[in-house]
Image (cartoon, rainbow, N blue to C red; front, top):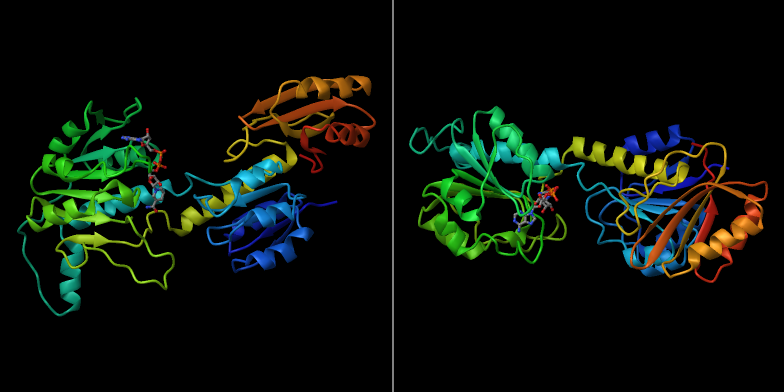
Length: 403
Ligand code: NAI
């Protein structure tokens, strides 16, 4: 029996290609189905793949508890009721870092564009104005970029910037290995005072909310540039507008905003509109064909490993278990409430059935435990039924797909 996978919202075709090559049956649809449509469609499928526009509500999950897993072929997972999925033993996978190179490249482009006032001059040329002048135009070579948040994006930006002859400073709350000749600063202020470009690559947390405000902007070098392609809440827009108007900051490039339109049909408004040397982009840092391809590959691979091996590494709502493939034995997957004594009960059943446990892997979080067992038995179906009948078992199944 081949497992059936439903992919919606025009997910990159590489995902279907890879999953079909693994022997799964894949159906693709281009639009984001409504709750009603999902309720009609899902009973025929074992796995659902969505992007950011399909809402997977508690009702959808509770009406489809047969689902093995859900894949978000994007970064965010807010559109899925993760708690409901977890309580029914359904892991949710995403691809959090597949688009990071795209963001780093955009920042490189923006540093050059800002220091040459490219967008303003191009706009002028379109209007028939000729703005030929070298005043205030500089190369990025030899300049310093200060990277705040040296994670997946920040560290890639560091390498790309150095390869253009830039100096790199970075500030992170976690100790990070500096790449190339990049130098960490102990304080955020040190970075702000010494950078020609400041680029933000931190997550949205209570600590990063408004982390670049009036005080921090005042510390930045006169004539420097600010780039934010992280999260809109990180920069205090009023303070940035004042600094641009007073020419303390020579320009900025923002890809993210405190309030963003929910769709391309909504109007976008910002106090930064109309200011000189200000690049505003509609949250496209990670929006490239290559990123879509990489996301398609990454989530398809998570599905393959989960369906064929039982691995939940990378699941956002589930204990992560990284497993070797089984060797001949029957692999049983069990999700249970994380309460004392459950493992003992399961082992009791296995031992009563006279089955030999070859290997056992267990990971837990505060709510659930995910147990994978390789057992030698001729009565796998009965064993699975008995384990599932335990009061605290949420879901038990035998691995169906062949690795
Ligand atoms: P990451 O998790 O790999 O790196 C974030 C880094 O920030 C970590 O090294 C962390 O230690 C550091 N950090 C956390 N709090 C900090 C603080 N208060 N001060 C200094 N450093 C701090 O994340 P990644 O993948 O590099 O993404 C960075 C940001 O870019 C995220 O906000 C993400 O949402 C955003 N992003 C934006 C995209 C776009 O389209 N514009 C696309 C992809 C990501």
